[in-house]
Structure formats: structure tokens, C-alpha cells
Image (cartoon, helix red, strand yellow):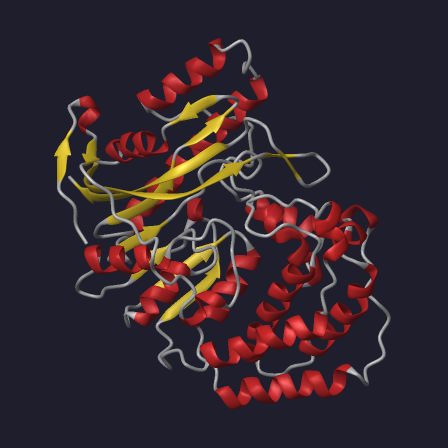
Length: 417
């Protein structure tokens, strides 16, 4: 789907005359329903963009693959795709969503788990107090979850095991004492907490039945590859990919969506330690603050000036966090242009940091201009308003001016000059 564009004289930034939208479209078709992921790209948008910029069906890269929306759509279009992410939960989910496994193998595994669930006698997993498992989970859920992950880890077939680890992960999410549909973890309160009485085995079984049907219906060709990787230091060859379709983070993990906060309880249950998660998180854009300088962007300079002169919002730490994120973002964009021979599509929204509005679309376009890429097309999409709150030191979210409301999403398509 295309829309008529006109050129704004301000920095050569192309503005859309009208928007595209997918509000009435089903978003949980195929394996998209297997496991939710925070701030996922709309699959219909991903599909349209792939068709728009990769008509010859070359290899599509998503260097921020998250929950795998782009890769699932590439698979459904029978287009080769590759994805990387710094978050091991994203790697697990995306691999499960894009890897065909025979229905019999998945059904046999479920039968093994259910038959041995009543027989197995294991001590409930013990977690360090700092993980706050007893805060996020009811005591009666700990034993059943322990049994399930113990049995899943006994599976021999790696693709089957990966699928069931993903099923287990979403079950952990289903039974945790958290509000759904929010970008930050927030514990259930009041009557919501009183009414929440999940049955772990029942939740797991339903998730497994859905996954068996969806995974076994995937194309059998292994044309999608997923792996752990850092967009700032990709190991791919120059021009290895014909196009890139991605949705990078809108800000650092503390002031943005909070991918690792969303993932941490699931990762704990999957066997990752807090130290391991921190090591993965260190590769997130803007996580390391030391010795970072702002990239060349007039829009970013305006943001930093506003933050500096706003007495209410003046916060040296916030300014440092802002600089670190866009410093790393520039490196990521440079790497993306290195490994891609064709068009690059970036889906992103604007944000607010310390009560200062940040125009991510304009900044991205200026940074891409530094890399000799021009804006080929810009489309907008109205989304349900979501608030990005700043994370509390002890976990959970507090509603501040942190990330602000986001209700407009830009699809920015770039090509080499």
C-alpha cells in the first residue's frame, strides 16, 4: 500500500499526506499467537513493507527481531530472512515462531510432559531473594512451574525443546501477578489480585495445543535464521542482505519500552541468572553511558538544549542517557547500511524524556543522511495510546513524564543516495 507524499523544505524531510492503518486486521494469525512480546510490530505492516522494498525476494534482515513479527511474515511470504537480538528471550521466541516441527513430534512431547507431570517429584525451584519471584508469583504456582520446566529440559529434540521452552515462557507470563498489555511490569492490585487464581497446568496445556497446530502448519523450508547478536557489531558481510525491515527501540531500556524488564521473570524461570541478563542488557542501545558523544543531528541538538535549559527537567543523568542512546543508535544505523545493499525500513515512534519531546523520526532521518541515505518514503500509523513509564529501582513501573504517550508510528523507508 502506498500513499502520496510531498516534500517539506525543513531538512528535506518527507511528510505523508495520509496514513495507513491496520486497525481491523487480525494480528494473531499463524505463530504470531504463540508468544506475546512487548511493543511488537504489527504483522500486516511488516508484510506490506517486505513486499514494498523486497519485491525480488532477496534476504531480509531484522537486527531488532524481538518477538519475530518481521520474520514470521517473511516466512509466510516464502522470503528468506534473518534476525538477531540482544535479548535471549527474543531469540527463543522468534526461533519457535519460525521453525517447523512435525505435529506428531510436538504431540508426543506434550503427552510425555502431561503423563509425567503427576508422577514427578521435585523440590520447587529456589531463586535468590533479589529476583522477587515471591512478589510476582503466587506460592501455589511455583511447584507446577518447576515440574513443567524440569520435564521440558528432558526433551531430546532441540527444535521440540525450544518450542516448549517458548510455550513454558508464555505460561510463566500468563500466571504471573502482572497486568497485561502494559509495557512495564506492574503487580496486580486490589480486587484484580484477589480474583486472579490461575491454573498453571491448564494454561500450559492450552498454550501447547495452540502452538502444536500453528507450528506444524508452518512452511517446512528452513529459510529463516535467528541468533543472538548485537546490531552495533554485526558479523555479517557487506551487502549480505537485500533489505532491512525493523523497529528499533525508541530509547534506552530504562527510559524506553523496557524489553529486559518485561523479559526478566521469564528468563529467570528459563534458567538465566541475573548476572547473565545484565551482561546481555549491556549490549542494548545506550546501556553503557561512559565516553559517549552526541551524533550529528540538529534535531537532537535542539532536544539536548531544551533539556539543559528546562529548569523542571534539567537532569544531567537524563541528558547523559539521551546522548548515550543516540550515540549507539548512530553506530547501529551505520552497521545496518554496511550489511544491506537495498532499502532500509525503520518503524519508530517519537518519545518524551524528562518532559522534553524527542522527534525520533526526524533524528533518524538526519542520522541516515550522515550515512548518505535519503528518505524514500514515509508513512504514519495511528496506534492505541501507550505510556512509557520510567522504571523504579526495585522493579515495576511508576507513571512519570519518562517516556510519555505514544500514539503515532512512523514507517521510514530509506535508500542510498
